[in-house]
Image (cartoon, rainbow, N blue to C red; front, side, top):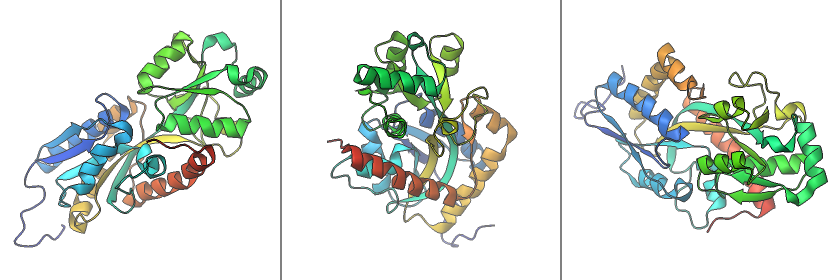
Length: 307
C-alpha cells in the first residue's frame, strides 16, 4: 500500500482531467480514452478526456504544465511533445523540466506509402525513381510540425533524394490527397484506415520505419533493411505536471501497469494498430530524450521553425 498523509484524502477523491492536445479521433485521443476509461473503473473515479486542439498541441500542453501538480490534471500526448521546443519559438514549457512521465502506452510503426501510379514495389525502386525525377515528386505530411514531416526529412537525407513537401492540417487530409495523386509519397503512422486502403489497392506500402518488422504489417520489410539503422516511430504516452507528489505518480503508474497488462485491453489497443509498450516511467523518459537528440539535429540542419 502507498502511504498518503493521514490528513489527505485517498487519491483520487474527485474526477481527473486528462488533456489531449489534438483533435478527437486521432491516435493519442483514442488510446487515451480507452486507457482513461479503464483507469476510472479501477480507481472508482471519472477520468475525463478533454481535447485542446492547437498547432503542435502547444496550448493544451501548457494548460497541464500550469495546472496544480496534484494528480487531477494529466496529459495524454504523442511524439511531437518531445520536439516542440525545437520547432516553436518562444514556447514556455519544456517536456523534461515541466512534466513527469507516467508511461509510454504504445508505439506505432510509420509506413512508407506511395501512390500506385508510381509503379514501385520496394524502397530501392522508389529511391531510384525519386533520384530520376528529382523535385518533380511531392511528399505529404500531417503538418509542418508533425512527426511525419520529420520522419520523411530523415528518410530523404538517408536515401539522398529530393522531394517537395506539401503540409496538411492532419494526417487524414494528407492521406486523401495521396490516394488522389496530388502527392506521391508519405511516411506516416500506419494505423486507422491505412491497412484497408493498402488492401484495396488505393495505396502501396513499401516498408515500415521501425527497426524490427511490425506485427501489423508482417509482409513489409523495414526501411532499415535497405538503410541500416533507420528508425522512426510514433508513440502515445501519459504525463503529469513535474511537481506531482511521488506517491500519486506511483499510484497512477501501478494502476496503468495493471490496465495495459490486461489481455482484453491489449486486444483493444492492438485493434487500433497500437503496439503496447507499458513498463516503467523511465521508458517514456528515455524515449523523450532519444527523440530530442535525433530530431533536434534534423530540425537544426533543415532550419525548420514554426512561428
